[in-house]
Image (cartoon, rainbow, N blue to C red; front, top):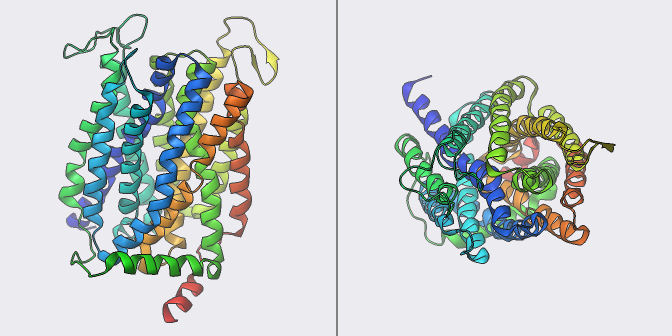
Length: 451
């Protein structure tokens, strides 16, 4: 491999490294349980979190395929990445204003949604660059290495946050027993609130290699009427989906299983805080274990993908995640799998650590394999549009899991029963995967190109 190609691949890896802390620190392990602390009531916090994430998902679902088609038509992927990176940074940094006793929940959720939309839209365009980085035989390994590298970035950011910034509400000290640095006021939870600015700063610094080393191979010339042409091409692609049944089935399958997985990530921290009574620091330690597991298995998953192909890898990961979802519902302070526990038993904590490791491992594997499966299913001439559709599939029902969890939690008044919709979503995704061909609709794409 020549040096230029190696630098381009490493630059592409750095997007995963730079953006992963949004998922790790904000979505799951630091900011989400902090929201529960701010609101006090775990069920109310889980419901509000569900509605906020669901609203952002609806915006992403509506705009993602249009943006992908526009990028393919105008050849301006890097410009879009710059724009959505700005949204990521501004939305993340604004979470600093979530002060105890003096915060506007709607504005905080809006800022979070802006950052989330920026991250998801930037990911569409960086994912669409994957086919340019290697041969069809290499991209599974490249994708797995990228996810593993991203998990490592999330791990380093989480350890940094826990060791030096995220203070306990009781002691005002971090996991290492330190006061937050830079004069941050522990009583005002400024150390924990720093998670927003830290996530933004992390992204700014570590996107430098991406912008320095990655070049868009498409022409950057402007095309008159690019938006109109993009919408026309997108409409034609959607009308032709029935002619590509494998792609159609894969988009539908991934729509459900990725939605369920995102539900696990989004609600894992807030669930542990409410059901098990974990603090932000406790959830962070849980996150370290899950991330290490995710990084290791994302790397292994890339190798399995290269050897067996992405479909069997995805199938095995869905089965593991379904078991984890069932186990999550059956673990509480009072019992495990229906067996009553003595007061103060540590078994629920141990069980949830194991569940977290499984979720991290299977989640790392399935996200990497799903990315390479999309490359196999997509029209090579419309790759960014295809990843826009992939984002649509991931976000068309992305409001479904959060809203189902929010509504179910509100109706039952139970965080445990509130997450049961995830089990059904995983099973639907597994069923639809039966109609996905390992190599996609190659003959159909040839016919469509010649038509």
